[in-house]
Length: 621
Picture 1 (spheres, rainbow, N blue to C red):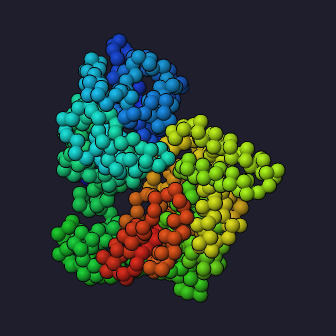
Picture 2 (cartoon, one colour; picture 1 turned 120 degrees about the horizontal axis):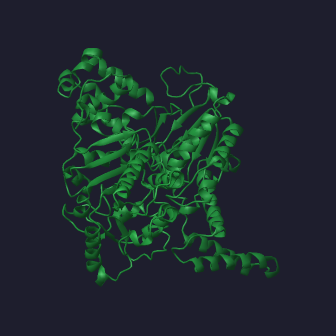
């Protein structure tokens, strides 16, 4: 702890504006360590992590190597983990990941690279893990260990239940961890069930530890690891016991730390309107009291006596916040015509509006705002849905195989003369699938077919919302078509495509997601491209009348105090939405749990009890 604001933090945390800034700082530290060791003719021993989190960090190291001559000749590396049973050249092996993301781009000798051997036999695992530990000791121990953090709070693959002194070993992967990897492996059935991982004890012996986390989706687990009790249920919490561990966070990942989430608990605050609403709704939920029933003593006993001094008494403050919350609820997401809109979330005019829904991948739009799309159309607004990517990376081989088999069946039922080309095409497709196997890389033809599968599902799903095909657009941004999950490299062409569609449609409303996502995820990449496109078109006349609403799809849901527009849904409307979502056959089945949870939040605060609510936050730009 270095300040009053950080008094609940048991691990030092440095918050940066974005992940790029954090990675530059860490890369400079690593470069300094390497050069210091070079000067004394010694090795620098680095522990390395995989996954999307360290990718921008590795790019910074490559930049330092190519632009500033940083040599890795004196570096020895030890990776945290590897899937058990994957060949090194498997597209999802961590060996291949490290080759693609770092090793093939710097002058690190192969003999100094160490990755847990995922291809040893089951009988050899124990000995291989012991040998890995011995190699670390022989190298003099790890100088700097790089970590990410999983959704269960794991470091490496140390799933819940891992002991503080656990060594390198085989571990059974948690269901949540396998679910998070499902898209990479084109389905959870293909995700390995076991992995070899450095143990918590192995990690804790590193002389310095730097854990990186990006995006609001990681915020809650970061806060638990940093401020909660040390527990084997969250292996990252053991880092509280390390003398030289540090968390490097972007603004999103740091947002649930007490100093950011509940600053009134750690010192005096400047009570802005947003902070007041956050504090009152937090107190209501903490005490399980509706907002209108909070008392003066409730505020005084929870660090908010100065708020009562400025805005009290409690009765007056409660009414103010209750009214603000009530004003967020609207069944007119496009604005209600001929009505006083001072207390409505969206303007009455212009009416009708041109509403543009941007979806990073097909299904994002319906999962988050299917009911709202239906209302906008029903109320006469012009609605266009733009799928920024094809979504083909989320389509399994079985869908492409079914397509080819149906094509052959049709040919058999038709004139052979007219169907020779389709039959050849189907045969080529089935041959490509067989050649690549379940884990090979899709070629251009396969990705094209999977794009068509997703397009068909998207059109069929939106037909349930009465949206015509002329209002459905497939942008297929280049970064996605030429990339893979965790390995995207967006560029100017992506921004240009977004600028073109915005300029063409000139929307009065834009709905966008990705603000809380990991920056390297599809949604995170698309959100940042959207920010850039909006900046580049800022002087165009249509932006003067355009409002942007953020929605959450696979991301962390909005907290009640963050919601600027809450669109309620009846049981029938929710059922219709779930029916539309179910048209995406490759996606996890939606139950409406998120929408029901938002409605429950509002009910707990003392507002009307709805079946479900879709939530939005106005984008400040």
